Image (cartoon, rainbow, N blue to C red; front, side, top):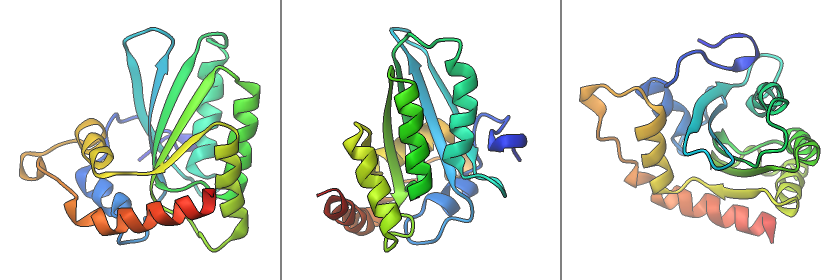
Length: 183
């Protein structure tokens, strides 16, 4: 699947993998982090994905890889969008905040399919802290699912028209819970 550190060599994920891990009705097998990085005024966007490993969460794997790339372009504005199968845990939230403090030119937008262990106060506080540090946090909406399907999924003719309209009630529930946490 991926190389060391959870960063995958292949550009896109398989349709079944996306459906299995981004469906808000089921627990994801693995945390997936689909991401886009846009540097400065360049019209190009770097798209890739990573997962968790047996020793690190997907967010930490991304930050480790981003640090290598970031060192080359430290002064240029950088806009990063994450599409996660789970929201970040409290520890990852703290690491993300530290990364953003060290890289003030980075703007981060985090969208996720499901809230991770939401009854754990540390995770709730982590999401609140991220929002307080300027990170845009939201539950993936139907257009996000469609965008990820078109952009990050390796299409095959038989399932090109994926549309998760049945997720609408769960999207509303997760959005309401997130609003309550961030209030």
